[in-house]
Amino acid sequence: MANRGRSPKQRPVARVAATKASRPARRGREPDVTEADPTLFDPLTPGEVADALRTLTEDRRLGSMAKVGRYRIICAEPLVVKPPHWMAGHRLARVVAYDYSTDRAVDACIDLDAGVVAHLELSRGQPMLSRDEEELAIQVAMADDRVRDKLALGDMPQMTMHYWGRNPQDIAFARRSAAVVFGRDANHSTLVAVVDLLDNLVTQVVPAELW
Amino acid sequence: MSNLIEEANWKFHWRLTESAGIMIYLADFRGHRVLWEGSMPYVTIDHQHETLDVEQDGAETHGPWWVPLGTRSLQGPVRVQSFRGGVELSASFEAGPYHYTQLWRFHDDGRICPWLTIYGPGVHDQHTYHPHWRFDFDLDGARGDAFERFEDSRWQRVETEGWFPYGGEADEGGNVWRQVDFGSGAAINIRPHSWDDAEVFAIRYHDGEWAPFSPRNAAGSATFPAAYVGDEPLDGDDLTLWYVAHVHFDQSFPYTAGPWIRVEGLA
Image (cartoon, rainbow over all chains, first blue to last red; front, top):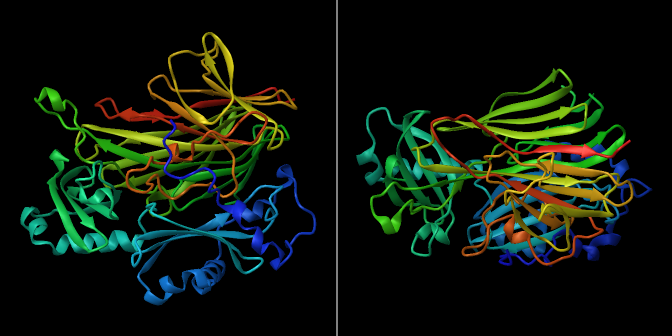
């Protein structure tokens, strides 16, 4: 298992030492792993999410992304690092976004105590779909004539899956894609429509039994 | 409902994540730290085709897909229930024709059962589920750990990161992999379900290398967690283990995947 798309040397938080002096941890003593503060794992409050997103979009490294405004916030969740890392004990947010203007995933660690982007990684990885993207994929699929022609009375969108192709001939191999599954009820699927989220186009329409 | 549970010799916290199901964190058994964090980052699904063409037997023409198990797919509340000899958390998730119940069961003798019951018909019969669990065990502290697998009739130390499929050999307790702590001599034993076709990825722990919100890497690259595997040494360090099951759908579903985990050697 030597194949690895991402070098393990690109370890995320280890590359943030430049921001270390920005503000001390909110606790004076660095905790041991057995004395970790469980509140650091608590879900982010709406205010913390807003704080994290403001900090992220004001970072000059993402100036272009923020200016163009073709990005989706995928997720913002708490991140807790272990001692002896210097950020252990800090309140951290991990924010994942997808920038459609550059076709890149944005993976950031925001130190909410210090008010800085402590780590930023841009990659060709594909994070999960945001809820907005799931809804958009349904709208694109429903508007496509090939899909509408194949839908039977009572067929409705059942779910939107994050999908990627297996071989390079498949458009979804390299492009951000969703698969919208239609059916008459939760236990009977009838049709799958693959949506290219970069161009908002349906690229495949497949009867569910042939998927 | 409090997210701290103290029962059956266990003390642990839990929370519902956006994409990795119920996460357990800071779990102690009899006052000793066992787990920093455990979760189920993703369940991917592959589809196969029935064909009469010998050269394309069971061909997979489409790639995998997945949907996060978390707040958006949760059906009803997360349940906390006591049972004879332990306590369990359970939550149901649904995405169209895919239905799951995630379970975390904690027994008073030191066993943990992180399980996933899979049911629902899928879009057709020919499909395979790949639930992934991620465990960051901190046995009596984070460092000073090692990873071993049972092979050639004995436990063998694994020096570097890697992928370790179940090859059919197990100790007398059915355990195939274990993480041992040098200081305390305690161990975490992992016993796969016989029908899981399971494998374990053993990776050196790095801060921030947490649920990547997708198994999908760049086009043409290995998916996660395989993409995390390099050649870093494991011995004496802090480890992260991924348990991956491969479960083909059949008419006898529902099926409950996942390992038995037993903490051993903590006073």
